[in-house]
Length: 333
Ligand code: 1CP
Figure (tube, protein in one colour):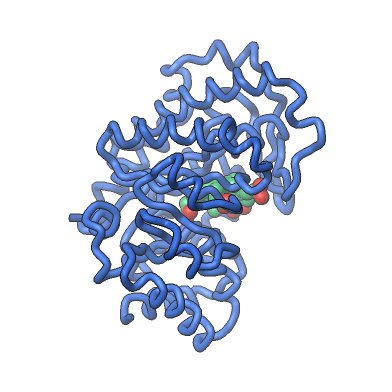
């Protein structure tokens, strides 16, 4: 059985597998080298030789239990024909959302645009390095994708006041997102992804009253779909105030917590396997602090099925030696 499945399916508490969000990325000099020669980020994701190489970079260096495919949640709007670019020191920049054009896109058009992501998953998952490890596929949650597609850039911690103005546009877009996320999940699984993680990076922007319509119901539809494929699904509703309520409503196979949630509170209130939590900024300190903070999570979750990870992506300024030290600390625990 693959390491994450032991925790997620078997509910094993005697060992803690580890992988790190954004483990394939900017803190690694070998990634920055490739990135320098490939200024177009989407094209890099769509170059399956390079994207599979980048996916495996952290596994060649560190004793990690899973690979997460090097791609982006914004491949979905890209596959739907919305313009997506990444600008240095700005982040994602999307073209206008044109519903009349997006409704004309069918499954074949979509797959044609993003097929190289699936080819990369196939390459990665059949690599012997991953024989006894998981290959994680992922999607952005409907809410977070809706935010980028309507806002056309990062909301940077707040929604514009008139975000909900056009309800027809919002509801039609959500239904298209649901349809194509299922297609995207199916193709990742068919090509070797054996876990799906759903990133809801902007879940924390919503008020409590809006959670059922924009987070719980749309995410539940996808969680049930992944379960129907017999693949475990991990949700990460970053910044949501009430993780307990989220889990009761959506019931994924595991939940990634963010670093603002008190882990002692989490272990008391969450009934399903937990992943993550450690503040990525801890990796910018020293070995003593890293050991202390990582041990805190491992101690608190010692009798709870727990996958080690961070409470958000690893920061670009992280020293790979400190990353290595964290992995070693968890493995030696
Ligand atoms: O070199 C660069 O400038 C590109 C930086 C980069 C990288 C390495 C981006 C742009 N995306 C990625 C890869 C990526 N994105 C992965 C690969 C696998 C891994 O984790 O190692 C994953 C899982 C994502 C997911 C993703 N993209 C999320 C969800 C997780 C999170 O960080 O909250 C989000 C919100 C995005 C959008 C995105 N893509 C890139 C950036 C800089 C952003 C965030 C911008 C913002 O603040 O709104």
